[in-house]
Length: 134
Image 1: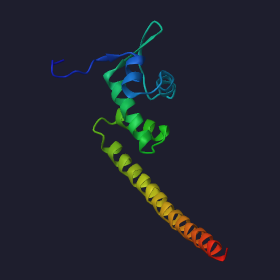
Image 2: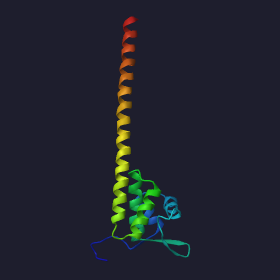
Image 3: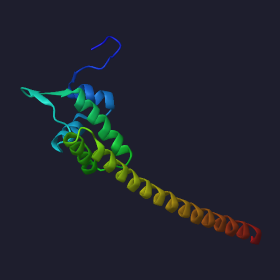
Image 4: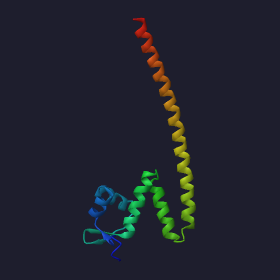
């Protein structure tokens, strides 16, 4: 490893928890789900650079709304096909699905905002009318 590359080659569970600001319990959960596969030295888990990258991808996918099952599927496709053509096509399908869901949510939010603005205007008008009648 070069001096300019500060990444370690192995990590403890507490190293990863601290780096990604998550609990060790979350990391163990991802391990239980088969998404991370650390080596063991006695009771100690030793995570590789690959595990660190996968954890970063899991968390990024989670932020983007990907389920753990979808993330697992991508990892499995990548492991089976290192050229990643199938993985990339699957990713594009998932991206299209997520974009459609987000677009629907944006449309729903716009409708709710319009309804709230209308209700607000009605309330303000009613208050103004009561103020003028008193």
